[in-house]
Length: 203
Image (tube, rainbow, N blue to C red; front, side):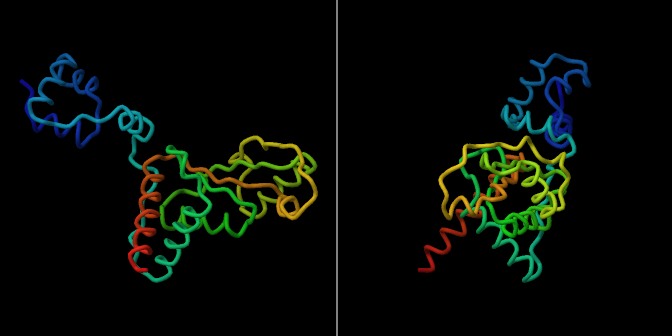
């Protein structure tokens, strides 16, 4: 027999896998499963188990408690930017792309100051037209974002379009910021939906 408090401590509190628990208490994994079912201890999903292995020290983000008007404004700005410019279809990461360095910097402030992400954990991708010099575009964004080149993926080059306003706005390419974490993505998407619902009710 495996005591319930031991299973709760090892599986729920310490986030150990059933295999790890079986080795610690010297029993088979099947016995661990049996007693977890008996005690009604809910098992983690496969995605949660993978997330746990990838983040053994816990979530790589920490949402800030909003205490000031400045924080509230930055929260609203970040959620608004993601609602308007973010990639909501990608369920595994937070992504937002734009040609305006100011918009990208504002979203970075939201991720760092409100979501508690380390700036060096952010990743960037850059897409440019074929008539734009890749190094010049990359240097532009490195300077604008105070980022390290190691945070960038390979620059994506697409065929140049016809001359026009759209092309002129993309002289330095489209910069996309990435943070691979589905939990944070779900939190931000929920805030977007809650904010949208609130605006609808206020009309």
